[in-house]
Amino acid sequence: MKRLLHYLTAILTVGVLLLAGAGLALRLTRGSYSEPIAIAPEVLGARSAGGIWLFAARAGKKVVLFDTGVDPDGRPVDGILHALGAKREDVADVFLTHGHADHTGAVHLFPNARVHGGAADVDLAAGKETGGASLVSRLIGVVLPPTPARITDPMAGSRVVAVGDGKNVVALPVPGHTAGSYAYVYQGVLFAGDVVWYGEGRLGPTPRPFERRPDQSRKGILSLASAVEDREVEVVCTSHGGCTPGGEGKRLLRQLAARL
Image 1 (tube, one colour):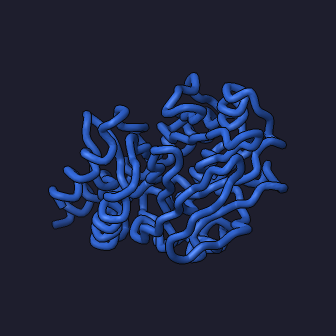
Image 2 (tube, rainbow, N blue to C red; image 1 turned 60 degrees about the horizontal axis):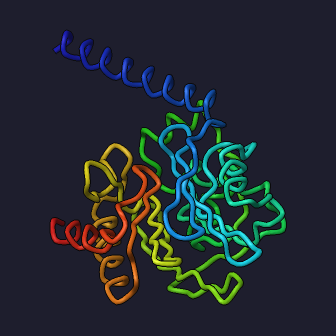
């Protein structure tokens, strides 16, 4: 028994050190990002450090952001704005899929923008509570402290938000990953945040090490698949894994729902 305890302690220590190392690496590289790519007309996505995706779209002269990544200096956001021919002052709306720090890091750089997010994630985004974060997320957060973000437009229930140029963002509540998680539909693109992940040609649920509420998340995925069934969804974009191919989004979401 004593030997087993030593063995388990050694495994736990190594795991903690690896997670701390991952958090430190993310902190050192959080300003890096890949070349922004086109998702749909005037909708771009960019993969930043740690495989964290963020997205931006034109709405006439205005710009809409879907999450802001983890970098408090906003370098990945600036990169995607530059690719759109835009500047920070052009950002009129920021839609947060949820309040975790790897999605809210640059919100404070847009003080004049409306910041939309789930009412249940207001304190989480502000850094006042953990939102039932997984052990992995909490350990990384020790090395990479969150940057508080203020949600100016807390939402409950489904909503249609006008963003300019006659265009709307459809906001759909999907509680599970966090209590205030939301997904958004804009111009045929579903921005799903951490509700689902994309990899190896298919959508899947958030991996267990990063998920504290697997049962609630499963219900959230099923409700999301039902909510978008009658909506135009060509592409599903996730915060970890990127986007499905064009025209495949709804089919892959249906397949995921059928597997759950």
